[in-house]
Length: 181
Image: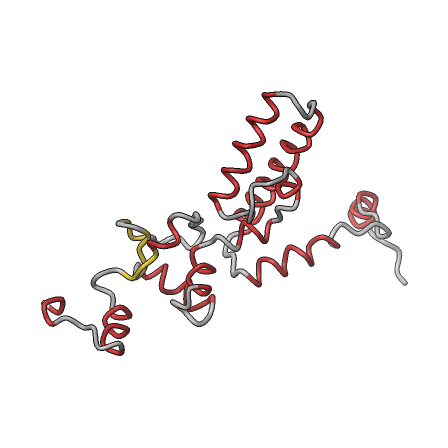
């Protein structure tokens, strides 16, 4: 083996080949691939939100059990997380500790569309969203990173001028001739 040049030695001084930093990257890559997250910054933001929620619940657990402030803040936190759809019940603070990045990713619009059978695959759902064929309530959404709350889940529909909506209505024999105008 040849002797290392000066700049190569300098670089190797900063790198430890025994402790590898990329072991967490496998988990990150799996989540990004599973939920088709296009920007790594979105994953970092979701991870930061999970960390903030867990630190907040840890601080709340340090307070006395019968403290009125703890009870009020715990109820607010659990209610907010339940309304977002991140937890299933508002019974205990341990549910807030169990929130993961994947649970936040499951509330993204394309994932909700696949779960509602509006699209067969995540990739197709992302394409529909980016093309502007999906609306949530009265607003057309073109960002696949849009988080759908539990209340807004019922209002995810196709845009009125969407070809997909027209095809679905035609299949179900509910196509109105007035809508074609």
